[in-house]
Figure 1 (cartoon, rainbow, N blue to C red):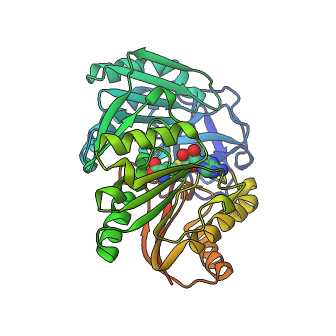
Figure 2: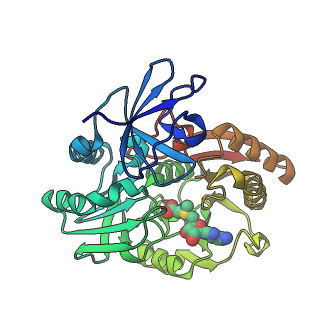
Length: 378
Ligand SMILES: C[S@@+](CC[C@H](N)C(=O)[O-])C[C@H]1O[C@@H](n2cnc3c(N)ncnc32)[C@H](O)[C@@H]1O
């Protein structure tokens, strides 16, 4: 049977994200598949109809009439096999939504377990098939989390806390009680670059303030590379306890660490007034949508000014943003404004992005979401 056709207005350039305001005729049935064409006859591709009134059609197969219901299993396995090769270690992202051309589906692997996130209703009818596919691949537990158009979670098989290793650092991951799927896997390479650079510049015995530390990501690599002291800061007690456990798990020495529970957005002045060789700022996404952007820029600015003030002259600032709607250019502009306000001079030594198992989709700038700048500050 032919797919229903959606016609996009002739002024709209190719994009996999089709908003309801861009189409001339709509398709009302949520979770169906449609063929998207422009009025001039250019085939955009096959799309799923989402439950959203705004971002109504998400193209999964460009320039083609192929149905995702026929090919999603192959695509999941191809992505899983590829991403396994892209990064070292037993924890990685196997499927990343639009970047894997599987909109609304995220799959992360932690050793024997898998976390599946479903954010588009289209996937609801395939939930059981996804779980079976992963169990057949040899994973012993699958945790499904449903968001946005879907709700709830389900554990299939058994899931226990698990220890995974990434480039010489062990992390205990409590999948069922985690903020994300388990770890912020996307920062893997930026942590290593930041820690190695710190060692190259300062030798062993440098100090680090790891703000928004979560379970210790950046600070743990700093300890591995010879930091003499790391202060981990987060607003959530549970993740600081996990960071402490991770320090012990790796044998890095608790005497080299302190753990401070501070709401840095509300009371950044509560951060210690000391100066550090390295300050890391890795806040949560302050802007989840365009409408949040102005307030988010103010929060990034405030936090960065406070962070910069605490970097020793000649020290490093590692500053990140995972807000997809804040572009790289805007983030750089914001950092230069923060430098001016903090009356400091800085050079950008490195600009990082999400690691390779978190690719971006070149047609959707928002999917290039993670920015990580490392600056030398005087
Ligand atoms: C992007 S994660 C950091 C990931 C971490 N750097 C890593 O490498 O794994 C953001 C962290 O900010 C923390 N957070 C959120 N709001 C905060 C606030 N107002 N003050 C301090 N920490 C906050 C969250 O608990 C979370 O752990």
